Amino acid sequence: MRKRDVSFGPRTQLGLQAWDTFMTLADTTRKLGISFYAYIRDRVSGSNQIPPMSLIRKHKTVCHADHEWARDEDGDGIREVHTNTAEGMWTDVRNYLRPFKGIHKDYLSGYVAMAEFRKNLKRISPIFIAALVALHSVYT
Figure 1 (tube, rainbow, N blue to C red):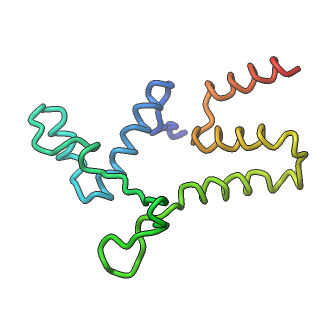
Figure 2 (cartoon, rainbow, N blue to C red; figure 1 turned 135 degrees about the vertical axis):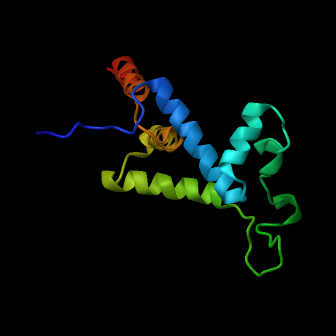
Figure 3 (cartoon, rainbow, N blue to C red; figure 1 turned 120 degrees about the horizontal axis):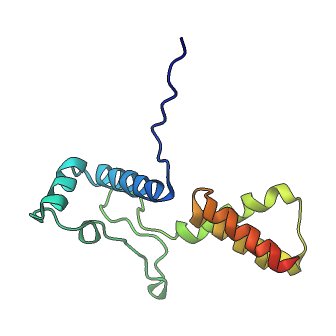
């Protein structure tokens, strides 16, 4: 007797988008210390007792014009607000380019664009494959 194969993942592209949204919201509420189920119940019921995520989650920035590169928000000695986003992007580009063992400078912008596209994509999907095939047919 053979057991049934059970898949807990989504089966369609729309299901994949819903799954990603659901998991992102679950992670965000956990990081903010909000009950995920209470937040969903509040949104679905329309009671709106919990403010929207855009008001709860504030993106903090530094002001380079004031010669500020990092800031300690809560006084614990750890600088929570910094410029790691830009530095992290270049780290991702470097890691993406490493297997190529060097590229020609004329093609650098294309490789950087591909690394950025890959970072923003997060997951290979049929839409991504179709975009690659379309680009390939343009350049060949």
